[in-house]
Each structure stands twice: as C-alpha cells, then as structure tokens.
Image 1 (spheres, rainbow, N blue to C red):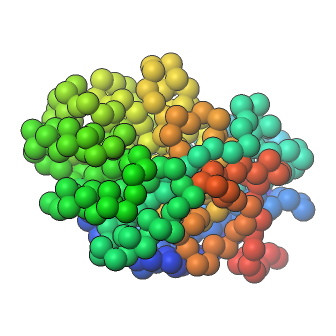
Image 2 (cartoon, rainbow, N blue to C red):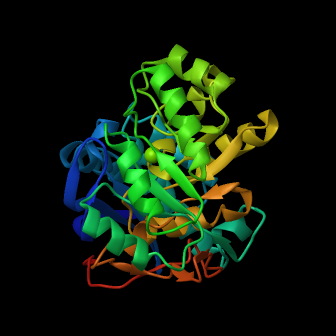
Amino acid sequence: MELYQHPYELIFKHPFGVSSNTRRSTVSVLVAIKFQNYIGYGEACIPAYLGESLGSTQEFLKRAENHIKYRDLTKPLPDLVSEIDALSPGHNAAKAAVDIALHDLYAKSAGCSVNQMLSLEYVPERATAFTIGIDHADKIRQKIEEASDFALLKIKAGTPNDRELIKLVRSCTSKPLYVDANQGWRDKKEALELIFWLKDQGVTLIEQPMPVEQFEDTKWLCKHSPLPIYADESVKRQQDLDRLLGCFNGINIKLMKSTGLTEAIKMIQFCKREGIAILLGCMAESSCGTGAMTQLLAYADVVDLDAPLLYTNDPFEGVEYTNGNILSSNGAGIGVRCMQNVFKFD
Ligand code: MG
C-alpha cells in the first residue's frame, strides 16, 4: 500500500466564528492510500484545541506511510488500525485520516460500502442541524435565511452576549435551536439560570456548557438542567467515556476526536449500552470526513453534519443535502469521489 498526503485549504463561504476565534479558512490534510487499482481517501482536519498541528499531522502520516508500505489487504482491518494507533500516543486527527482511508480502501476492494462491509444498520437520510457561527447581526440574519431548508439550527454561543444573540435569532425564526457554548460558561449557577431561559426560548439541547476542567460543576449542571447536556470537548475517545457517566446526557462523537470509524463505532456501542444519547458531529471537514460519518447515520439521535455546506472549494463530492436532510451515499467505500487533481499517483 502507498500512502499519499496533501494539505488542502478549505475556504469558508462566511468567516466562521466560535466563542474563542474566527477563521476564514481551515487546512485539512487529505490522504489517499493506494493498493493496486483501488484508492481509499481520508482526511485529517486539525483544529488547534486538539493539540495537533499541520507539522505533527504530516509527521505522523509519514510514519503511517512507512508502516503500511509493504502491506497488502490480507491483515484484518481492525488489527491494522490498532497497529497505526500504537505508533504514537495522540495524533487523533491524523489517525482518523488513516482509519477512514483504510475503511474506504478495504470496502472498495470488496465492492461494497463501508456500512455493508461492517454489517451496520443503514438509513438513506437523516435531518441534520445547520450551524450558525458567531457573527455580526446582519450576517446572522443572512445565514438563518440561507438555512431555510433546515429544521434544527445549531447556534454557536458561549460569549457574554448569549441572551442578545438568541433574541436576534428568535426575531428571524421560530425553529427549534440547539446551543453550543464551546466551554464558554464559567459560573454554574449563572449557566443554570441561562439554560432555564433558553428552554423558554425553544432551545432543545445544550452542548459543552462549561470548560473541560470544570468537571464537578458540569455534573451539578447536568443534574439540575431542564435541558439535556451533551459533551463535546470533554470526550475524545472511548477511554474518556467511563468517567463521564452521570455527567452528561449525550455525547458528540466526531471522527477527528475518536481516531476514526473503528473507535466511533465502539463509542456508539457504549452509549447504546449505557442509555447515553448519540450526536454525530464533525469538525470543519470536507465531504470526505463527513461522508465517512454518514456510514453511521442509523445510530444517531441527533445529527450535526453540515460542514461540507460551509466551503467554496470542497475537493470531494458525494455528500448531498435535500430539504434539510443529509443523504448517506451507498456507493463503494465511504461513498465520495475526489473531484480535483489533488493527488499525483506514481
Ligand atoms: Mg461543539
């Protein structure tokens, strides 16, 4: 197998703001793994808070390239993924890129989709939330108008102006809202008061209200909150789940945190066992990472997979949206095609 990597700058249609920063573009490292005539695609999307950088991602991918260089497809996929994981601690997004590309490659060589290969449940489409980032009032109105197809809006909050923000959104739409505070609330009592107010405003769930390190405060908040509280930054991999029992009602599972599909599926199994709600989310990924996640759509209680709608230059196609639903491609592999001449294969 040969592994190719290519950094690719995804340009946002609108600058994208959350409680900590605003970005005009984001860099993903696209990965292709080639074996004979089959090519599997993957993607590492590297937001700074995961502690990964372009350099560390490329360096890890080089090690993965060397590791699989003399391999064919005879080793069971879970074993190969475990070997890649063991190369070095951390590097979750880089590992996700390799995991996704290997799933795409193995399924293509078997002539089926990833969900068929893994005997997963399949649904062709699900309603997805659409994200409204932190922005000026005019831009927020414009984004809400552009999101007219979507039944659920995800509002990025977590600043001192959250009440004004929600009032502004409410002046434009009566749709149910889902609020992501991105760790922005520090005082548990103020947060609880705000959550009661948000419930009256038609908010249906809260994501990551408080900083990861305020574990006990979040537990208290979850116990008293009239709305379900979901973890995002507080949970990356399967190993984080046990200690979060009783602290959150739901988990936002993302491939870039979980190190890919292999562990996302294990996290889904844990949540099903423990009665924890499953939110399938994404980072600022192209249709490659998001397409991989659509293989798991059947298991989601809430879907937040709108990232491919945010760019002007998605290098993949195959993830479609109709009437506010994301469609799961049942094509070979993860169901996406590389659109541009990104990779030069030997
Ligand atoms: Mg979040």
